[in-house]
Image (cartoon, rainbow, N blue to C red; front, side, top):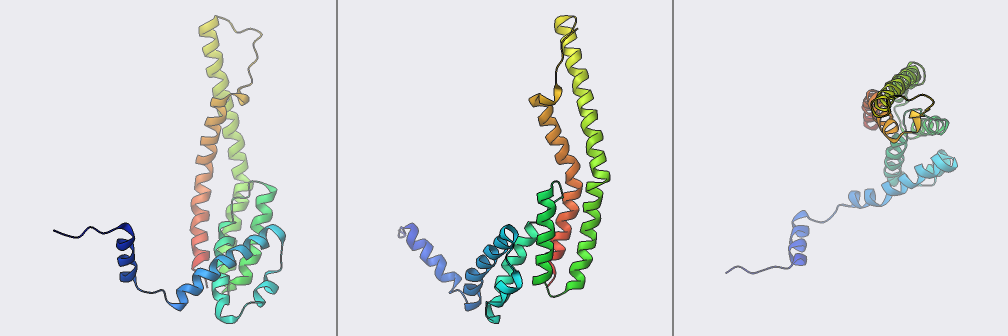
Length: 196
């Protein structure tokens, strides 16, 4: 009959099969998270990336910059508020610092800016129209329901915008409207990640 092994023994056997981590893997595990923290400080506190990066040896700088780049790319979002616009600007400036192929980065940025401009311009109009249409639809449904229940709804004023069902439907509609922008933005973020 076979021998029964503990979970620790099984885990140790699997670890042995994987082999020891290379020096490069250990450096990556140590310094990519450090780069991620640096990027967070840069976004939140506005530290100088060039100065911060100059404090690292060349042999580990690429891992730091990988972590910085990952976080900065994740911080690029649709410009739905002034804070989002500010974060986008900071993240995009920071990426230019850590990416060596500045022309390719700028090329992707121009595509992103077109999306952002459309989102703020025509997209805002679409959202307003969709909101008013949804509001009118909900008002009609509520009036119809009240008329069926009460026979008359004279003097009753209902603010549909405060109704949980309306807010839920509006969130769904916003998500649907934003999804087209987010899909393109994600593609551009992947392009940015691939640039050295």
